[in-house]
Image 1 (cartoon, rainbow, N blue to C red):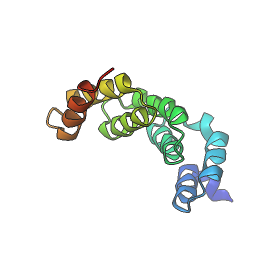
Image 2: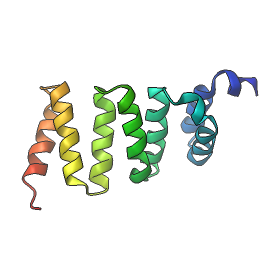
Image 3: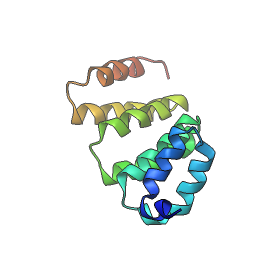
Image 4: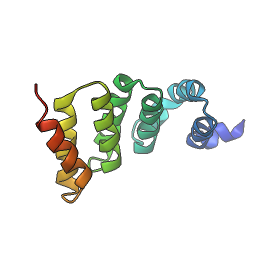
Length: 121
């Protein structure tokens, strides 16, 4: 039990690795206040919601992660996919543009941006 207190993120990862996503979310809620300024925490919890196909809950968590680590392409890629899942074309386009600003040679972002911009409204 002491491991939870000392290494709560490790316990969170173990729950995820076991596929105990609901338990992981409940545990994350219980420790959230201790990790307000922790990029990894928000990325991990956003990822859990994304895995559970709850993109609406995942996006704000990815935004919290990005507020702490603005140039994280990995978070932007997953956030883009969450917007695509919700059919939020304009938001996905903005994410692609941010990725390209950070990594001008990111061909996946360029390709996706081109596809999205050519879709009818």
